Image (cartoon, rainbow, N blue to C red; front, side, top):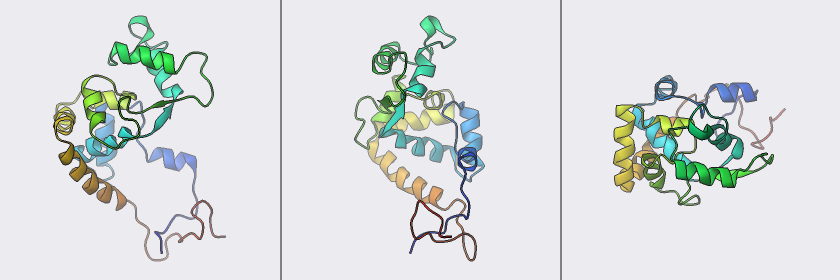
Length: 182
């Protein structure tokens, strides 16, 4: 038995429920709050950026043609920006990617938060977590205490999993997760 899924699915609908990687702290806080998630949930769930990759287009926006010195986003560590330029040279290749966490890209850990404090967050929304006193305090806590991050991550994931749950006759349990039943 699985969870019930909607009877339609669109990229626009999915995107409207996700925070933008270009969001500032106030926008991130509002987006998470509108789903019943706290500031702590926001910072905790952002820790999922500890693993995985992103398309170089996200890095390029911060290291090429940015309205800052040398075309680089001033909220980005300059050494990290130069590494991003090497990993994502112009012209960008369509499928080029960069790790979300430059130190331990394949390990789920608290290094993401250490990276943020060193201004090594890939997304503008990552850097935004340093601009609000409340989010900054939690980033600092998690950079120092991996077990606190791990414990809160479990709770925040469970909380997020309860958002918009379909029940009764709503939606359907799909036979194949990537396709509607009918």
